[in-house]
Image (cartoon, rainbow, N blue to C red; front, side, top):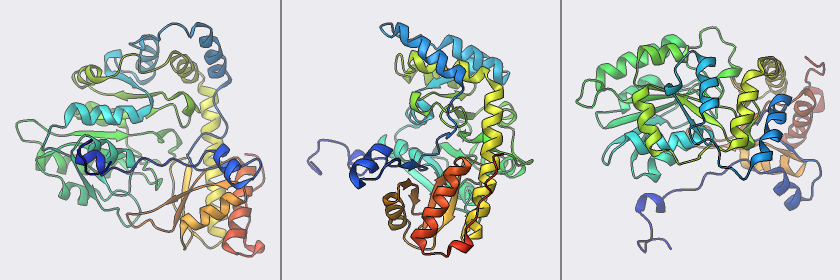
Length: 386
């Protein structure tokens, strides 16, 4: 019904978010068996057994509404991070919180900013609410160009999203670079009557970071109250199917977010499983250890095929396949392997692939070698369990 006034121009112009294809769809459409999904950055080792047990227990009272305030989970998160419970806002995944931040803090005529090569949910949230989205170009390292981002914003910019590490490139902004960016930003646009803009550090993949120069998000927030940290249980904790995310922010910001938060937005099973997952630190540590080891092995194997890999600090890698990535992924899916083509912002020809278990990585490398027509003598991936 385009152009008949049923929806706003902002909604009319939106393209729906396209997730990685589900296993069931690929198997049904292409007739393959036992498809391997490496498209959505899921935790291939799964959640803590304690989280599964807690979820099962919570099923026994499904006729009751969940705790609308998520009191127990927010208390556990506050203790875990060394903050107050009033500094925690929960969401149905961190995606819901992205939309809440735009709805709360961006008025008509104001703008949202991020990088053109970052998480598409930022632009969808801004544009669906009728706001102009400012997108700085990617830097030469496939990461955020922070200087270009400062240059692009103006006094209308009220929320700036920075994914650190970045999705879909896997790159990390170091602590010193982030500090310089915030100083330049506040010097440029922080002195207006509304004060400095809110900077949202989306740390969905922070658990997988092993670089020594990574910023301490909590320290950044404490030093700059107009900062919001986003975290999720969908990645390292392996609870993507339950949709549990949260924000760490000042009590004033949290209070406004809670005014627009939907009632009962976090279900009882997700609340229970997240609390149990948070408490099982040994499981998380092992998942992170195996992911980092497998990430290194996968990157080395791809480079061994002569491909260029963007250095990653996440549980996925971005690889330049040197040709139409959509066509490459289509051929991969016919071999039962689902990856994610990435386009735009100078990333055409790139595939994003979730770090899998060693056997998953080998299967992907074998399929990619065949699809790209590379000699089998050029492939190789460490087979030991690490």
